[in-house]
Image (cartoon, rainbow, N blue to C red; front, side, top):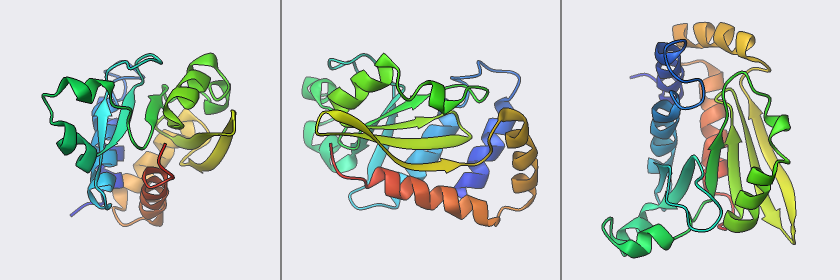
Length: 181
């Protein structure tokens, strides 16, 4: 069985060049985050485009399954519930995350949700909101740019047990269990 990170990279490779750069990778990322979330206690679920509850519509929300079950999937209260583990903001592969880290969009999400996982599929940055300011947390980079990312994907796809798979997996585990918002 392939590592979930290897599956993620393979799925990104399959949609590369044929989909919208930012959104075509949503299913692959959601699947990876849900695989990571399934390994945690409490289990964490990534929901793409959660409802706007006051700060706009983030690309994703990270909810504990315990909280989702408590509110029920058909409950209107669910739409008012903030994602317990923060939100996800996704940018296209060719964009540098540092260009987005201090934007009003990211700041609004941080102030409202308390935590954000910012990614361009090849890099991941965890940010939190503490004492009225944005605090950069852990960062994980698969590749510094899009070209090197695709070169690395070709290498990693050939080796489903490459250590890089486990490094990203462990980073995401830490990101999903970071202090509750």
